[in-house]
Image (cartoon, rainbow, N blue to C red; front, side, top):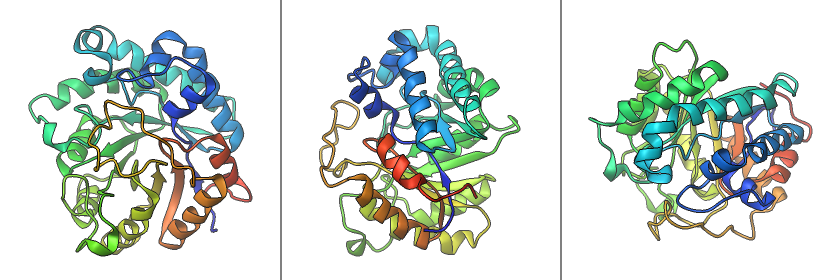
Length: 298
């Protein structure tokens, strides 16, 4: 594989595996609230595994996961804590950067719930809390163009690049779709145009099955024409479009997604133009360690 920048893996399932407090609906926010030392320990393990960018544990700091009352009272404080934990772990490594996670605030894979009149009020406390600690903004698991544009707008004027990362339809094989699509049904080509329009520093695809990533990269690469980097961090789930319960259950991990198998996928992604590679839900420290073997930062 060519050289690439290595992201970390999935925080939530790594917390679960370590024995930290973990359940739905709080997901990874539960450990942040009850056992922040466990969050720091996961960050440290990803840095030790070779991650060059680690992501703040702020993905679940939204009303669906922690409740509206707790969000109103504590979202900014919890985001600040998430930022401080990641920053401390990054500073213990060699040139490790911190990506501030900007989540889909109305739920993962739910573009139908997006509310343009509410989104900025929900993102604002997360941005305020994270801002002092991060090097780059990572708008993750964006299911629609509207979500992604709102996330980019939320961090305008912060003086740090924003990476837009989209989640893809994975209930249909790529060869059976006219062209790769976001979970909203909007096209990857239009998402790439949006990334350029909002001045994104990179375009990524995450929290979808590995099988759909290569086609999305190929499409985005044609639109972007080398103007911004591409990246991938897939999950180890089956299709989340099939059960529709991604925000309510703890999905099973695919037994075939071993570190070696994941690296085989990563080889295909780098061949398709990706220069930023990591992992999402179910991709752990052992996968990142395997990715890091013999690589260096771009």
